[in-house]
Length: 279
Image (cartoon, rainbow, N blue to C red; front, side):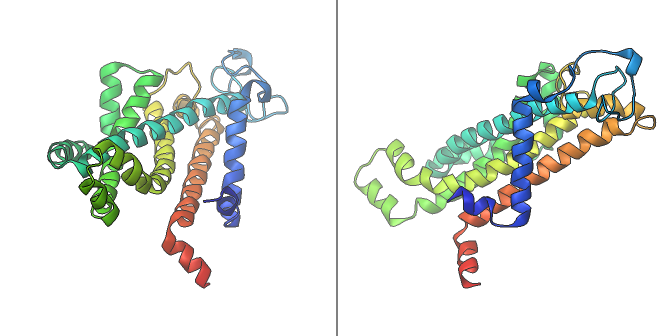
């Protein structure tokens, strides 16, 4: 897989990649990008419309909306990337065990089925309510509902790969189980997990925004895209931009990640590559 082939596979993917680069760089270099302190209260300029000084206007506390959206990207992106990494790592571990060891499969998959029966947003709200709102609590609450999906994906791949002749030969040769998993089974899961990771990242960003919007997410004093919308919904009729601008950023970021994930899927799927050659 070459990065250039994925990025330049279509104009939409190029635009999505450019948007993601801008969003990520803006979040990383936020202290040098924003024109105002995102947490500084200025009651004298509260609910101002967009001006030369405040590009997107101000919120109900006089804080610069543009600065808060840029800083909010830090929390949302960290949650999205971290949730994807943790969910993929845990799902890979449990999926390998479930797919290769029979008795583990019988026990573990029943627990996975039970978790998948609970709506993910309700499970996340329950976890946050139980442990209290914080960045780590929100991250755990978002990661746990994603793990069962990864477990089922890895399990299906392992069940298919373990029937291959080279795996059977390794078993017959007395190769240790951990070595069979590392050499023969894990490589078969890399491409699907990369694709799944992009979708989990987008889903986690959306879930964090929903939790914050419902008041069950990050501390309101810490700017995140969901918090900004939650604080602004009361003043929507006075200044709709407080909700619309962060909502637009969330939508564009998630759409860009999903488009990039689709491009990665097409690049890694041999059937899609074969169709491209035939055309």
